[in-house]
Length: 375
Image (cartoon, rainbow, N blue to C red):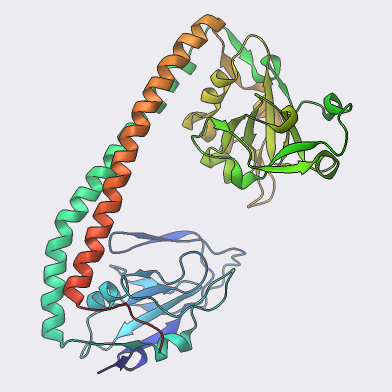
């Protein structure tokens, strides 16, 4: 017999203005960051034995199970189960598998009314729910242990590369300011002889990768359509995102395979053109260090959400530059290490996918459900 969710739970719409805070959840952390916080709080206080549903945006439909008393969060729906009918843990596991009714396209959301009317195909009695929960806990304990081991392996693997880069670039010999070894923001006058109808490569910010050394834009535009408002770069230039959070995330790359050797892109790019003393790959690896990003994040200005790394920080940053011959030798080692690291990460990521698939299969088996649909 189908059961309406509103008949077994009290359903509240979270509404609060809180400063940034984290809530401990079942194997997850639910990060909260309310914009425009004015210090006033309008909220529901809940005990831990509830489920919290993300009701809007990218996380829409994701269910969380807080482990301690918490405050309802803006744009969430809190489900407080009738403890005579349903256990919150069973409800949590159930909603990691079912598809909830969503509205909207660009910004999907779930309405409180739809959740109240949502029907569960089958709800076992509390004794059976507890038996299922116990079995799931036992099954997932081993799986979660493996997941942590795999995640730790990826983290350790990534840190080895970063440590190697730090050892290279913390040298106090042959130091140069970036502004003295690179032309920063090359002039568009270089292409004044190029016709406005000529095709050039175009690369928006979303196309600039992370840990992707050579970037090949897959868009093209007419020169006349882009030369006025976009950032100019040419073959071999190094591009770095200067705006938060793209800078901190490490969006960076070397422009390659450009149409007519010319490219344009986001106004939020810093363009470096290394001189003859420095290889562009040497500069790329210098900029692709975690320490550089952390230092840059401490040297930003602008409004919240639109902060940019300071021009002075970029220009005055010191980089060690050995001979070109030595750079080539070290870069060869970095490439070998990077390829080995990439292979290890690919294997680990494949393992993660297999583990997640296994977890879903176990859920489906123990919950004995088919894909739920909106009533």
